[in-house]
Image (tube, rainbow, N blue to C red; front, side, top):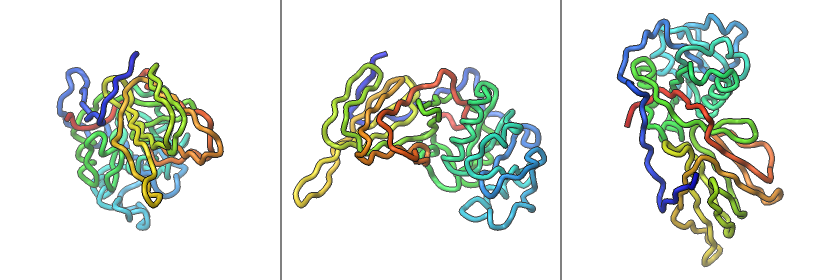
Length: 273
């Protein structure tokens, strides 16, 4: 598919599920709370109560969110949980944490082939790339959204390293030519590249060029954005290029990186804008 080119980044346009409506969710039966802080406990099935959550985990803005979950079992699963949460993956999940935690939970849902049957709500303490992209509220109000708002099908991006992208990724600096679908974007000056999900074709690549002027000052040109279903980037090992996705920094330099739209959608609980 030929990619479209824009001079500025496009705004997100929500696409609700067919027949979607504002609904009341049974908060005692239909919502599983995953708190991605502390240390994962061995008995994830039972969960704990708000009053039994260690006091040191209530800092960083998470206390009010957990207080809003007082009537629900809270599963303390630790940061960026892995296989230990598999037994909890059913129905509607509320992920309390940051973008990297949400990424980890979505990855487990993908690997268990449950994207079509699980809805995911997100409660962040402060604004993040994901909350900004989808217009999500933060703090304790996000618990109310998780209880009362329908999910909407949302594009999910994958990488050729086996990971996923829910919010945004940054690759910098990039000097070499890259491709968005079949469109070739020539290399040149160092650039910072932002990759995000996009509602129509799948992903958006926003490119900001860097240049040096008087007194070696770094300036940035007006961003240019491209949309498509896949983007392939070439890098030179040794140039110091870093790749950060959903707040997770890739641990080593690579000479190639691909993001592409997954064949299934993510069912994200979010308002319809």
